[in-house]
Image (cartoon, rainbow, N blue to C red; front, side, top):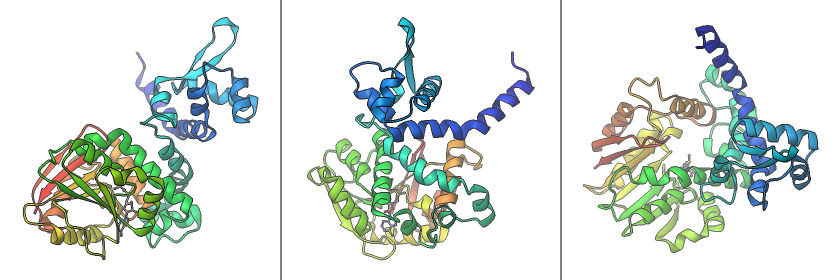
Length: 345
Ligand SMILES: C[S@@+](CC[C@H](N)C(=O)[O-])C[C@H]1O[C@@H](n2cnc3c(N)ncnc32)[C@H](O)[C@@H]1O
């Protein structure tokens, strides 16, 4: 049995090297390792992978063998040579062709989030996001920083969509939403959750409300949606009239904003909501004491380095919702990274 000292050594080593593990995943994703192996007719040697990717033979072999140890790939060494292939995990989550691919969110984490986390200590000192240090862009307006180029906006939207490809069904099924035929997803981005909503609830129509550049990008790159009882509406949810709906959805919105901005937005949603109408908040819920789950605590630090907000406990959401006039607040944990809170006007 491992001694307490050995346990501590191992834990420290795992934490110290954790960023290297992420980088192996990110680099293999960026280089197209998982796509090449998923599309190949059979397992490939590292030389064949290097030739296919245009990468160095030495670097490729090191990367492939590390991916094998991390269970991101598998290797067959029978017959005296190593042949690499996809693992269950890479086939399901890392190959771009998979319907549950996480490719774009991993690229976003690698190219944007990771650079902000490089300034975590400063974010803790300042109490604010780190776009100025990471990218030289002013942080006053969070989404101007997030959408600092067309490419960044598209990658962010694709990344947001990837998460709902895996978890969207669970959050939309956490409550029975069939009593709400007309749904408005505020800050609904590419419409990924709207798609889950209409597929789960055949009678419903979803209006995806987002800022004009996002709606235009969604129309251009995610066009299939408008045929599927999903429509788009351009606007600013802090200023413009909100579309009519039986149910408003705020998914991963409140965690972007300060308590003051949350209060402002929730008051607007409450005014727009008809009596008996609902509001579904989808967020990662902290434990009651705020000291777990660790994934949500990490998300909360991520909000510190990238936004003006934080993750919150059920009691904090209840307080924000009650202050805006909502009642009958119910919180449901899904067992996944995101949870659901349903409130009524
Ligand atoms: C963190 S993303 C969440 C997207 C989506 N709800 C999801 O869960 O994937 C925040 C969204 O809010 C949108 N947003 C930010 N400020 C907004 C505003 N003032 N009015 C409307 N939408 C806004 C962003 O464009 C983005 O789509």
